[in-house]
Amino acid sequence: MSETPKYPAPQGNAETKPFWDAAAQGKLLIKRCLTCKEPHFFPRSICPFCFSDQTAWEESAGEGEIYTFSVMRKSPTGPYAIGYVTLKEGPSLLTNFVDCDLDGLKIGQRVKVVFKPTEGAPLPFFTPAT
Image 1: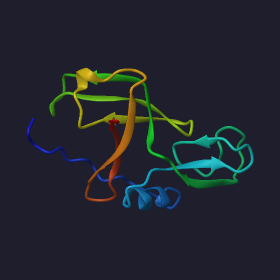
Image 2 (image 1 turned 30 degrees about the vertical axis):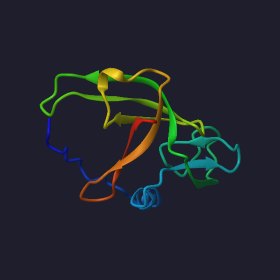
Image 3 (image 1 turned 90 degrees about the horizontal axis):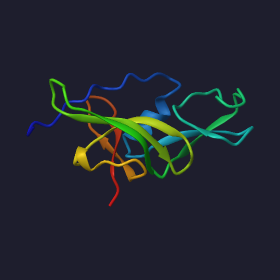
Image 4 (image 1 turned 45 degrees about the horizontal axis):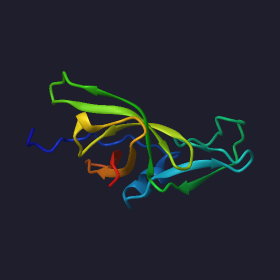
């Protein structure tokens, strides 16, 4: 397909505003619990490990590896791939894989974050690291 895909604008709220503001600057943020020290994603104010409300934003390197993925071949917009990436910092996140040969994706492959424009904040996706 030669058309550039259009991505929906994210629907943020007061709790996730710092995440989307950082995305507009090309930065991927995660949260870290100040009580148990565990990093987590998706951004939320309560730690999913110890339920503390003492969490802080931290910038992720935006690098990780593919934990698992699936290629969707039957779609009105053409084939695409979704899967989980485990970030260097530890958390895993669900994402789409873009700007790559879908048949070349492999579990354990190193990937990096890329941001794609929307009518709002850009969305983070992942592509193979070079």
